[in-house]
Length: 369
Image 1 (tube, rainbow, N blue to C red):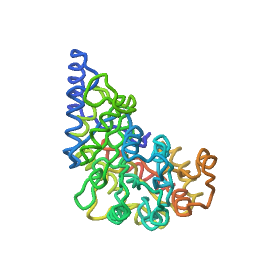
Image 2: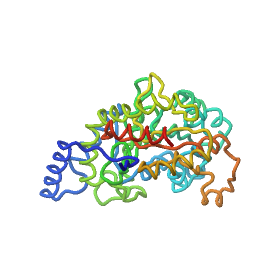
Image 3: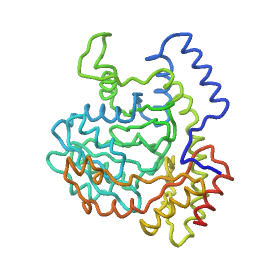
Image 4: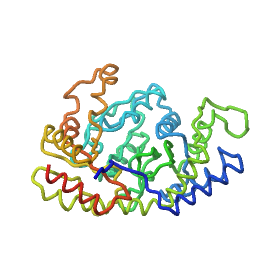
C-alpha cells in the first residue's frame, strides 16, 4: 500500500458542481472578478466569522499585502523560526525586518515569553503561526501583549482552515488572518491561492486595491503601488466549493488524528501533540515527537520502504536555512527549543478521504518500525 502525506477531498457531487461552474465560466468568458470570487469571499468570511475575506493569488501574496498595509518598512516584525520561510520573507518584501522567535515545545507555536524578550521600540507587529493547525492556548496572552505594546497581531493560519479555540475560529483572533490555499492545505483553490480575513474595513479596501495593481475606485487609475495578485474565477470556484465542505473535511481529519492519538500516546518513545478539549484542529499535518533525531530519521526511512510518505514540521527551521544564515548570521544554538523539538518531529499522512484501512496501515507501519 502507498500512502501519500495528503490529498485534496472532492466528493463526486463537489466535482460535479465544479465542472458545472467551469462550464459557466467558459461560456461567460469571465475569468477574474466574477461571481465565484464574491461567493468564495462571502462564504469564507461567514465560516471564519469576520466581516471581510479577500481572496488573492497565494498565501505569500496575502502576507505581503497585510505587511504593506501595516507599513512595516524599516520596522521589525516578530515571526516564529519554526514556519515556512514565506512568513518572514514577506516581511522583507514589504521593506521590514523579520525578527525570529523560539517556540513552545508543548504546542509547536510561538512562546509568549520569548516574544516578550524580542519586543523593541522598532517592533511593528507579531505573527502567530498555527503550526499544523493547532491554536496555542497562549494566543490570548500574545494578543494582549500586542495590545499593550500597540502592535498589530497577525495570524498566519495557512495550516488552520477550520481550526478554533474557545469557539473562535482561526483567522478571527487577530487584526488580520492569513490563509494559504495551496494544493496540500486543508482546503485548496486548485493549486495555489490565498485569502485574508479581517474586521478592519480599511484593510479590506486596501487589500482589494493592492491585489490588482493599486486600483481603487476607478478602472485604469492606480492610486497606490500594487501588484498582480488576483485569484482567478476557476480557482475561486474550487475554493468556494471547498469552503462549503470545510466543516466535514475538518471532522474527517480529526477522526484520523484521534485514531493516531489513541495508539501513539501509549508508546514509550512516541509523543503525539494532543488537542485541548476546547479546541478544534484542521490537522494540516499530524506531528509526532520521537525520542531522538536519529530515531526520527530511521523511522522515516523505514516508513518510506513501507510505502508511507512522511514529512517534517519545518526542519531545518528558518534560522538554519542557508539564506538566513548568510543574510542574518544566524547559527546553530540560537533557538534551542526549536532545534531540539523539530529535529525529533515526524509528520504522518492525514487527509479527509483517508480510509480506516489506510490509517490502520500507517499505525502498524509506525508501531512495527
